[in-house]
Length: 369
Ligand code: ZN
Image (cartoon, rainbow, N blue to C red; front, side):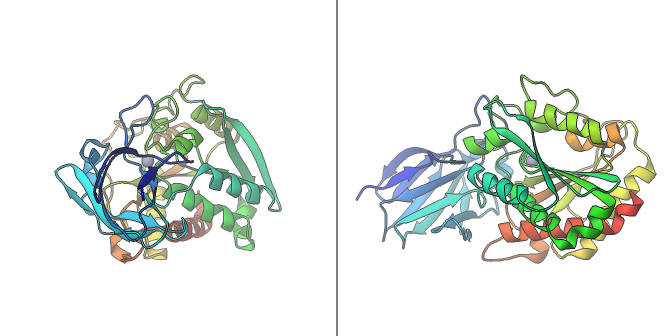
């Protein structure tokens, strides 16, 4: 039997370097027109009953090599349950052993959320009562930028995710958010807020198996000060829609390679910063930490100093442009260590549940925004 490594599918990313005996050497492919790479997703066939050692030999040159220590690869035989497997990182090489007890196995940086899954999410959400769908624009590859409007309240809330396509937990979060927003539970929020949702900002990167950029190698979260049709039409069409509605509260959903916890980042350092504006952001974090064991406020990014916010990033741009309480939510590729799960780590189910917790906390704060 011949071992077959394949990533020529929606969201796939790997290049076979060599197979020698039971050792399979692989490389992650760079984002097109970019040096970023870290997302991988591939399948193995033709190895039932064999124990193989997989080695990603260029892991040390990836975008965030400090993300590998303590990380565990996700493996699946049904593409539904993605379990963590023991993973080593030594000498710039990420490696793991796996015994194939099934005909096929899939391996990924995190449980994938492909464009095919995105299309299914869009279809079922669009059929829910009271939901308005619009195609805000198209990506450089011509894919739709999907948008939903739900509710009719006064406060404009924007939820958007996956500017960085390799952060698939961000669309799992959206999957949970949209299920809740189209349920009875959302009625109190939707009486006071109109919720605008872009579940995937970067369909081209998602389908191409990118980590961080669109089809032109552009990091969309460095474009919000000056998006353009040539480089970043995905951001341009969403920011134009925001200009029409205004933004009172926003969550930009991401994944973080290194920090083993959920956390949020704010907009310290914007020119219009005030303590009162910032206090609402910190209050959201405190209430979320009190609401769920899957959130904390101790670990996170360093804050920008006064006047030094990067306005090309969406969270800062929305806080400055609209006075929004503007939140970057980061979920781990590893696990939320304060409430760890030894089998699955941070996972699709927990990403979905965290979305519900975020929206429940928002409901309790909506009159203060
Ligand atoms: Zn990100």
